[in-house]
Image (cartoon, rainbow, N blue to C red):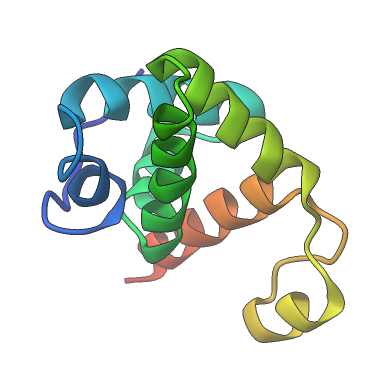
Length: 117
């Protein structure tokens, strides 16, 4: 299930919307991130609407500028973020356990942040 963005100015939606139609990109990213992380739709939305979602969008846009199609650009960004690991410094700063893939850690992190607001 894909939830609509609550941040059309910034985050993933606002960033991709400056270069491409945001709705298809949002849908593709939501599905791919949920599939890779096994996180809930609300956690995925919180991540994509966050500052980290903006950075994830930059990664997707880089893939598009390299000539990849939307799905391939999203999958490449997911693969890259799943390949990076949370280090000790980031773990101390955020509370995300060291060693987790960036994508899993940040999606869960923003989901928790949203729950505590």
